[in-house]
Amino acid sequence: MKFLPLNTSVLLDLKRNGYNILTSKNTVDHESPTWYPLTVFDVNDYLLNLDCKASSAPKEEPSILVIDDALKNIDEEQLQGEVFIEINHLQELQDKINFYGKQYTCISNREYYDFAFDPKRVLIRNYALRSGNHLLYFAYINLNYSKHLFDEIQDIEELAHSLICLDETQAKEWLSTHDITVVQSDISIYDKDAILTIPSCGEDQQITIPLKNKDELVYNLMHTEDLLQLRDLFWIDPRIQ
Image (cartoon, rainbow, N blue to C red):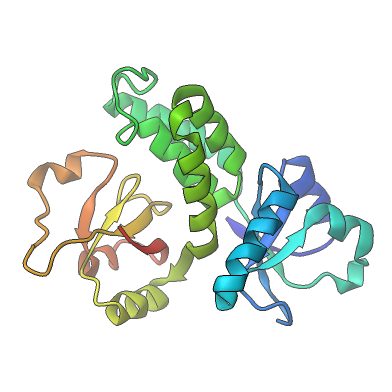
């Protein structure tokens, strides 16, 4: 992964790779926003949904740059900020699918795994959220789990607005502020690209991490103090599960 200065060449390259929107958690008047590329089904519908959500929660509205509009209407010198780019991410995704296939020998057999535990689905979902290529995930869901498509579109687009990527210091502060001591990963907890969620439990319920958890490559639980020693970059879904 890397950050590239926003310019016409980068926008054209993103468009060629199927992206149609850039989104940023920075405000529209920020001098150097950080942009993340997305691929959405319909740009107009996506913007309309954002407008509806902004009317009820204006502080959560992200900055949006439509790539086609930027190419047509914004001069090179007016483009500001940096774009987060995943390097060779499709090949990396395929490598992970192949690796997980050694652990889950029926990874390509849709009848062997249910929707929630399908390792290939979890991998593609993870990739889609980090890279912004949502259409790849939606195509997979439509082909294999069509009855889940509508819910998954809603979930992915909602999470795309709230997903955060923090360095070690930021992650430690965020976890401490929210009093989180255990997290759950989507793909292997030892993978730097794992997206972490906060498992929910009742006030009198305690989360126990099973000994065999380390043998699984999806949905691993780990104490945050151990997690913070693994790497220096953390993808976090801040929603309580």
